[in-house]
Image (cartoon, rainbow, N blue to C red; front, top):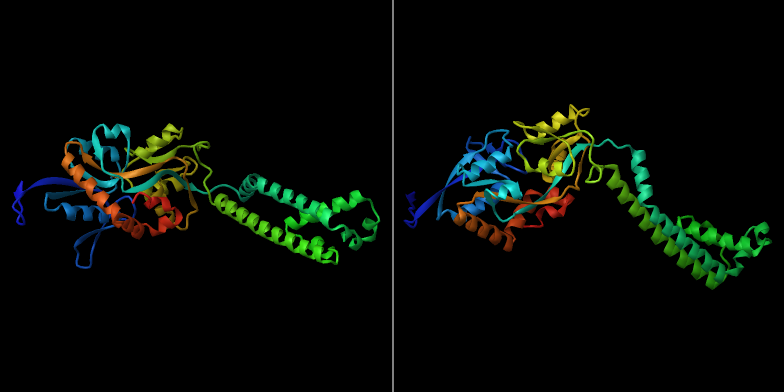
Length: 374
């Protein structure tokens, strides 16, 4: 304990464990040297913590301890927090029932997700087949609207047959009816030649053609848009989800909660340690015959995609969303309440959301849910 020069109150000493890295990422504080050689910190985690620290500086004396390079064993961080080696860990922790028995979680300040990051290896033919199958209902809608349009033409424009080829004009009413259906269906698929060229020369037919061409034009644009979205989703999408588990093991950090969560879905895990996320990804890329991918957070997956732009990486985002918190020693209930109060203050005045958006603008453009808790 020591006396504060400001208000002479006794300050409680708090051991703060910082998860730092000399690589720019999302799950740790970026540590670097400025032009004068002084150690500096930056990133979303540091923005959140430094704002809390300033508000609590009159009550606590914060003593900082930094994680070792390449240390990603979150189980050890939890154990050391539980036994009092640290009082609080400034990092991104997903809530876990077993861990909550020995430590306390702060209010969540971010939303993330469990993912499998891997190299895209699905053929374009397979993707196209999936798009056609999933878009089958859209095709049926076009055909249905086309049949309705053909019936309308048949009922309201009997004189169209006079302008059709001589053989069809002299044919049965049944042939003319099917020709009207053919015209309606063709129009819904963008072929409007029959519709416009064979119209009767009167106002009713003129207005009917304009109406059907307008409906057809709008429907074709809508269906083309849906097909484009489907192609974008499938051509660069991961096939892995809770119903389609990869055959080979995936790499995951020892002591990390995410691989344990995915194991419950049936994912086989090969645990690694003493390496960064990017090094783990490189290990997978160099051993794709052994591994199906790497297990990581959604934000880490996006960060890896960004940094390894020459790699054709995709991620499976169907293994659950997770609220992100700090962890605090369960005996430090006053600290827990103070930290929670500051997080709620930052959330209420949008300060937390602004921090999130400024640090994760690249990621929130892809998935706005990331800052939805802020």
